[in-house]
Length: 106
Image (cartoon, rainbow, N blue to C red; front, top):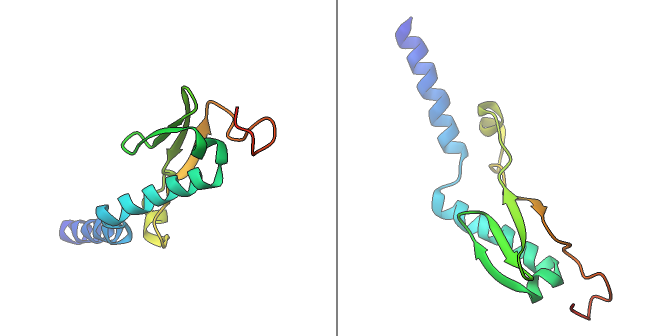
């Protein structure tokens, strides 16, 4: 009985690892999400200071930042999801758009 339980546990965890992307591909995908975000927001693009990949944060416009996260998933969701959960925008401490005309940076 113990062997059957251990076998099922190994099967579940190995399935989770197959459902996840290889790290080198996940890094490229997360970076793509962040650069697409920059391209979609002219203020962020024009005042971009840096991208901190490890902190999943884009810094722009004198102390402003846009923070990203990977939504938490249960083991069951990881097993059933194709593709795996994607990096998403979480929050920003500044406006992402210009208050006045888009062609006039402030």
